Length: 178
Image (cartoon, rainbow, N blue to C red; front, side):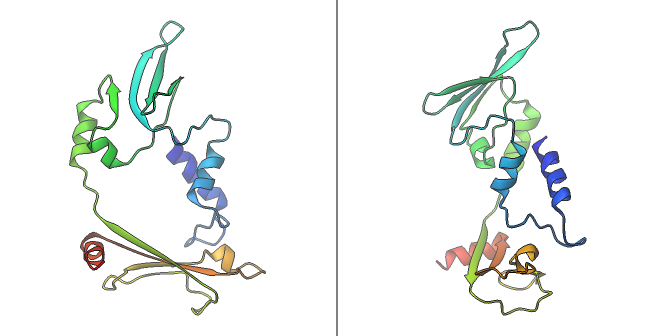
């Protein structure tokens, strides 16, 4: 449900044609906070166990979450977000266990290295209509610049941001160079 809500929020915030999604300088955490309005959100609750139990009313179920530090939460529903590695290392005990189709999928997925570099500069040195680039043979094949909403504002930003991203074997080579 959060994924769909996020798409809806992004579509409502779409401001610059068909090529750019601009959330007015917001980061994903801001979007998630907005989407969670009206819900109780516990951050830093490092879950060690997810247990479905019978609820107080007939034919109802509750989820019982236990944190590594012993704190507990009981709720009608819960969204627990963890990395794939946490699931693969089985750091969370699920009761009843996850279905085999889920555990098999978790075991099959591979996540590789990625390197993201963000640089802030005090002045813009690129053309006004340049926002991103994909150059398949470059060291950093993907590059994004300050969001269009910031750059097109009547008040120029104090700094501009360049973000470069690389994955796979290229990122492994970069990491190995120190």
